[in-house]
Image (cartoon, rainbow, N blue to C red):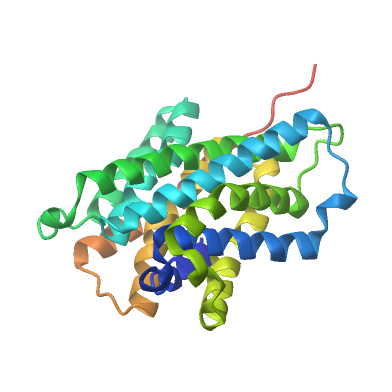
Length: 277
């Protein structure tokens, strides 16, 4: 989450140069090249079931990035991250069973609501941006579910960074045509390469590799609840990198989300597994 939100702050600098779709294409394409070169996924044999899961994982990732960056053209970053979080929150809510589970979700939602500047920037919220961010949220839910399946499917049932490399490469194939259509030859301008590479590493290559290592080992519900930290990290990244100030309500929202994440980790992750028959 630290890498993702730091990269998101840097990505805002690319928008005036290549547009939202161009930034998405650069982010995913460069990240794919880095991950494929480092983890060399061709050394691992995947069966049909795992290939299908990887392609669904990559498809969800590509669509999520396209929708999210498109939303940023119409609504503020904090609002977009907040709306996008409806996806992982839905995953968490779907798996909830005990009252305490719902308490952590409600607490995360309350903190999430406090991060939104309801009274001061309603005029800046475009309906189109809201729809795009919600679409990104739906894709984020698919990213969690299909990412877990990609890591667990196959004969070995073992995920790893090579799965992330294949997923990001699939996502890049989806995003690249949109980027070319939007930015054209600006995508190959050497002057923007350092910034684009930083965005690719921070926003895609590093966090997606870490996600793929983590997803096979934790429940999708827990992963979704832990992702409640994204709006908080986005706010902190904005403060440290973009010098955006925070109100008392936003600080309270960050605290509530962090408490919900810690509580979910303690009460859900440590439940004993069911015995094998």
